[in-house]
Amino acid sequence: MSEQEVLMTLESLRQKEEELELLKTVRRKEVAARIKQAIEFGDISENSEYEDAKNEQAFIEGTIINLENMLRHVRVIDSDNLSNEIISEYSIVEILNLDSNQTMKFQIVGSVEAKPFEGKISNDSPIGAAVLGHAVGDELEVAVPAGTTHIKILSIEK
Image 1 (cartoon, rainbow, N blue to C red):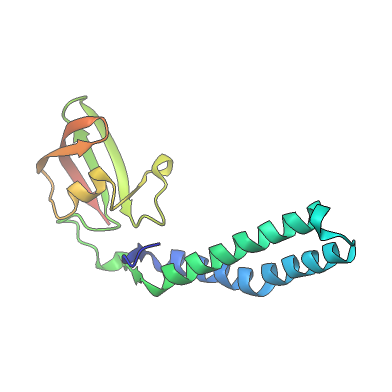
Image 2 (cartoon, rainbow, N blue to C red):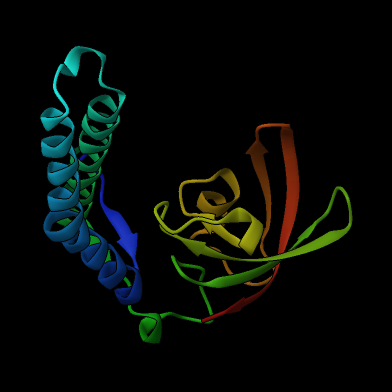
């Protein structure tokens, strides 16, 4: 992960801290015990249990490194301080696609929390980045992977 600031809510921060603590205190010990047990089976060159445990250990250590890096660069967003006038991270926005005449409602979140199918889009996504700093009534032309789309901002909520 890059040195880029990571945006998240206090709730998400706590979840990531708990996940990191679980990996460091419980999962590391579990996989170490599996490796020890696999070594006791004898020849590790053809021991699939040993290979599986070593692969899991590498995955856990990589995840720990990623989480530690993420948490070093976190900026917590307080939803109580959000404005209904200007779009910012964690605003809930309703837009009208002027090309298809369809409305869409989503929350702009940090990339770590993005879940497009749940209506949470990243502040780094084309539409998420384009609407930041805009107000109700603004019309924008947004470059998206499929080309260019025209949108109008209908509402902003906390």
